Length: 198
Image 1 (cartoon, rainbow, N blue to C red):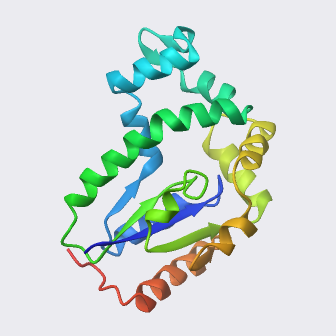
Image 2: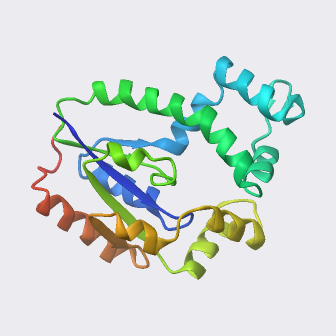
């Protein structure tokens, strides 16, 4: 039975970089946010988003993600509504993906809101990636077309590190990538995962 490593961390913690490093080590990785974007293009999900948030979020039938983000990241109730539409579809998509990776000892499920969505309950091991808040803000400002205020409002919407760490098996501090990568190698050894298991 394939075991699932849940990988999470707040916005800007660098969890995707760590996920990519797990992938380099031969562990299949499912990036929930990327898959959610694909799922949100399916007709059934588009129709549910239109019904919940209105047609004005769509231009030429394409979802204006920035407008949607503005609505949900400033309002916890609206975020909960969006999650109720998207999460079940992502869960179903992950189950299909997992069935295709059954020969692996472990896979990684990377999600920003692993705890908030309740998906951590489906994981065998949980790894939280942390970094000082200022570094996280700087990373997001470099990466996204956003403002400091918007980044802070997204941080506020997510669980804090203390809360995540209390439910995690491993913690990787990602202030320094070289040291963070060494932590990944240590985790693989502790879990007795054979690297490059494909």
